[in-house]
Length: 199
Image 1 (spheres, rainbow, N blue to C red):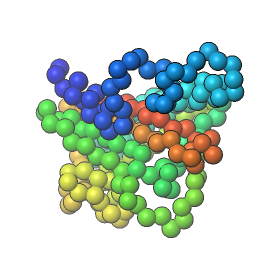
Image 2 (cartoon, helix red, strand yellow; image 1 turned 120 degrees about the vertical axis):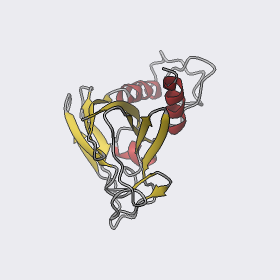
Image 3 (cartoon, rainbow, N blue to C red; image 1 turned 135 degrees about the horizontal axis):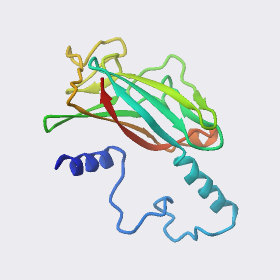
Image 4 (spheres, helix red, strand yellow; image 1 turned 90 degrees about the vertical axis):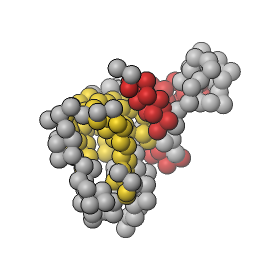
């Protein structure tokens, strides 16, 4: 199937990734010459951070024909993991959905321009080895796609409801940027993705 390389490239662009000239060590872009075997405290922090980034995955993803997506997010680590709630500016706008239908790609994303009556850094905590159920409703407001961004109280996108078909390929991406608030609150950041089956 020729669409897989295109999807992977698009996924890389959406998550802010670029092609590296050297093999990545998982360290930041400015840390190319770091000795990964160092025993100083900053190297230990980087190692712990890399472990934390790789400790969350979307275990199960299911999409309904009506545009709803239910996800099971799994904590693979031996420590509790915090994920931003969608009800604040740090957690809103982190979800993307790629819909591949008959060779055509449509992209949906949570609106980053939401308004919050109270905006404080709140999060869900997933226990060691635990799961968190996350529901996404592409027709429930605060989503963008089909050339339109829906208001919080608007159903569908520009008067059109998003519907999935059994033959669709639906890819869900959770892309949480590294922010000072995430570091200060010990909240997970990184990018994970999964393919959702249409029920």
